[in-house]
Length: 543
Image 1: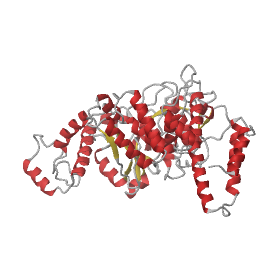
Image 2: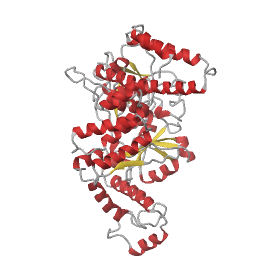
Image 3: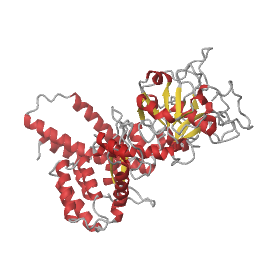
Image 4: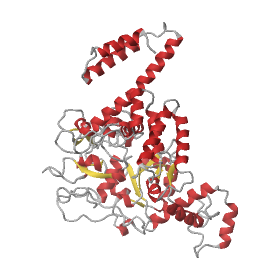
């Protein structure tokens, strides 16, 4: 529909009055947005307001395409590394503060409609050309495009590319007159037409769609599970549930409930019958309890291998105050929060590594240049202090990688003469961030803070810059601000992970079957003669 305003703007565009450079165009758009925000809409009539709303939505949808084009250029040129970010997702979620979900949405949008370059520098057409054209015209938005991508991802692999292209064009055409929800229904009908009896799906499609995701914990610390099982996994899982999730078996609320598999020779038939009569659980609850019992079985029988690595054990950290009060939340090395009440039950048969950090034992926490890799004692000390990746802004917001997915990072770097494997020169870092440390542009540098409220913590900043040192606050949310109590002389300790029994520092437990004495499993190994090793301040604890 033509109007004097649109005609005048068309004349400006046709005469070349608009600037050509992207920076000038963006500045002009920014200035126009500021002016529009300051302009009152009260004088406008109702039809004009509706027309303005439609125009604003068309601009928003076109901007989705512009945003995708910008992301393509950032990705192709690795421009995100100039700002110190390892990948475009990290740049969006942290650099632009969009968060993980929105960053992922924008990247999926760019993958669908963006014109990427191949290794030869040639510009490739969009993966979904009809959708890209509709976004550029402002008739289709990002949500429509993501629905189209989701529908096409379910098309069986044996369908020809030509048919898939026609399906994409049909969906893009339908999107011009439908909202995303209704477009999804059209997509379901399209899939039913392409594969009416499910016979087109094959092993490749099932393997492509398989996956199980444990969603983040909610406010009640519960976690929902989402996923799709292959027929092979479901068949095996049902066999296990038949034996482990039978009524009366593995009931955590019944102390007399038999544990293990229902077919075990040690199961008392009368006890099982009595437990079955007391069992009021639903089928879903029995399935949950069966998985819990299976996890106990795997941990107790060494299913994760020899307990020489942190990922091979269930390690939990908690403060003395919370443990004494039986209130609060503890944290596992894999990032799960566990209420103190459940921790006490969980640790009933655990081997405590508490003495390793509360007293200076013979555990080697200072290896100097004698060894590059951190010992298990050092890893446990790092978990007690850092609780997760220390880098600010990694794959997830603030890098929420749990400690079990981190490495011991040296500061100064090990490759320098000053690098040493000492507890006060180490910090937890996920593999991607650990490999990003260096002295070149786009890399990161680290330091162990020696004063202030965060003394002993590892800080990060982009290399070759004078930016302020940054900490990762994610893993310490809700914890005391002063994590490292002062020494008796008022100075903060440079070895924060080693505390006295009276301090309110981290308590670290390793959930393994308890032997007669911790020393029986080597919890308190004697220091090897590998200088430089600092002598212990106190004697090893008694069993």
